[in-house]
Image 1 (tube, rainbow, N blue to C red):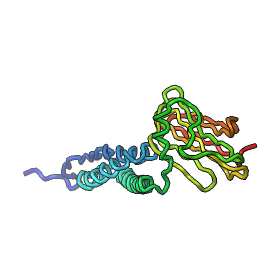
Image 2: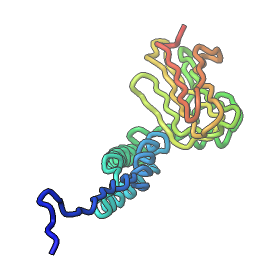
Image 3: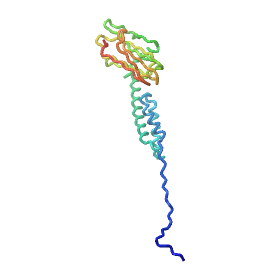
Image 4: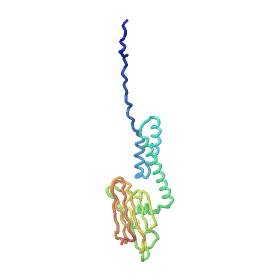
Length: 223
């Protein structure tokens, strides 16, 4: 019998370590984040989808061990916040608290061309001045998401207003601050907004970029 030398070591099979595959991001988590961010410019329509996609993504992440928990959670939070804000806005609008451009849709539809619209049943006093709020679209801007004008603390607002838009009101010599705020509902074109006093333009501005906002303001009659 042959004896094995005392220094000989038994053969050991090498051990190979395999790196685990990289974790992938959950697709619904990414979609939830994007929809939550775009809720600012879509009147909250994508915010509801952000909440739904975010909750589904969170369940998939727990089950499949995929990445994207932070994106899904952010999408859910943004979705709930924007959905709540837009619901509150529309409740106030339909309740008539912030809506008063009641004449916004009707007067514009009846007279689509630019020009002053005399308020029915109201005759301006000799000392009154006629203030006209105007908005017109160009290069594809056909509708305003929101139109808001105010005479002092008297705020009037309307949504989904076709362009061009014109509204005239009578104010006295000591008129408070006048302002007009118009947001483009289209992803193209520009909106020009103006304030005229007795037919003379005192303020004018233009919106910039998709869904841009046009805003003009004057202290008193802007003289």
